[in-house]
Amino acid sequence: MKHEENRMQTLVLSDQTAAISLGGLIEKSAGEGLEVRDQNGKVVAYLLSPDNRGAWLYAQARLDFEEHRQEIELALTRKGGISTAELLAKAVALGESATRP
Image: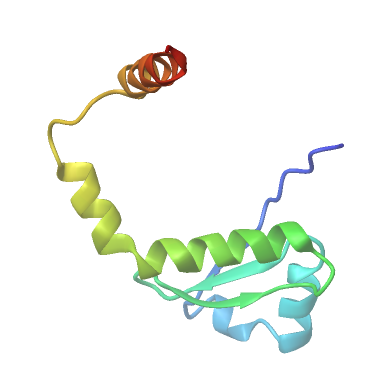
């Protein structure tokens, strides 16, 4: 299966971009899609082709990230826990002990 990298374009709303016509925006979004942001960097719109699955997946992932931003930031500040390698080693050990008579 061929992996196609999605490169959604970004348009930041400003005095300079305000002159772009709707047709120009649609043309700009052809293929990869277009992410529209306000001057503070907040996403305010997506313009996506109905047949570009990659652009739709990107937009959905971005929306999920924004919806759970506080939870993600909180998780990143937590200290402690164990590494993935330690977790996997514990899982293997438990699996092995469960199969012994």
